[in-house]
Amino acid sequence: MRRKEFIKAACTLGVCSCAGLGLWAEDSAAPAQNPSADVEQLRGKLDFIRKRFAKLVAILHSNVDEATRKKIFESLGRECAREFKSQTGPFQGNPRGFVEQVQKWWVEKAEYDEAAGTLRITDKQRNCSCPFVNEQLTPPEFCDCTLGWQKETYTMIFGKPVDAEIEESILRGGKRCIFRIRVAKSAA
Image 1 (cartoon, rainbow, N blue to C red):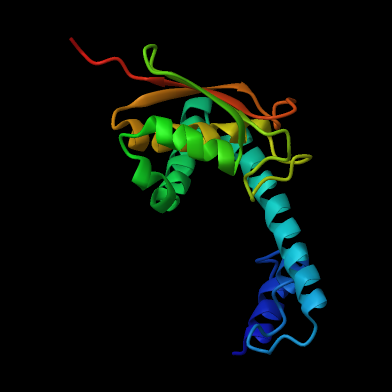
Image 2 (image 1 turned 90 degrees about the horizontal axis):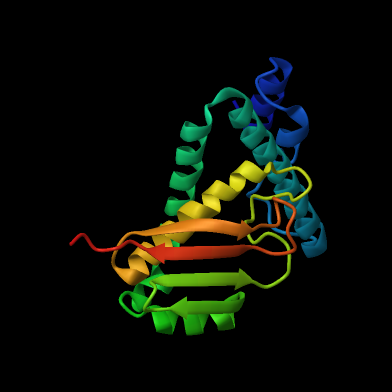
């Protein structure tokens, strides 16, 4: 059975969203004939993915208790942070170096108080940086994913567990995202 036949059969049976799978119905093996059409097709796919992902977050909100939902999103964020290990790994044990670098990459301000073991990250005012997010549709609970990212990233950099909290986020009505990171106190 060819790919197009499979998709038509699946949609007929109601197994999928025909509108969404229609975005993927063209043979991907065909060479690009019109680059701007390809870009528009990719934008359509990304828009579809963002809408479907926002629905998944809403479904989890309706069907999964808060503690479990937070754990799922935090785990997703930690996995995402591990994908960036090649960029954060060189800063292991060098939080000052990382703070200097992230101010070049994406943050407006990073305030590191070594004595207090705190770091406050203020992102530049912009759209949410997560490629899954549609700011008009994605529920604010998804920010727990970012908390997982923050915890994993800064645990790697500091070499010890950290806690993270959101002071402000775009999905929760803010103009930007601001995070506070606290290095865990050593047991005496």
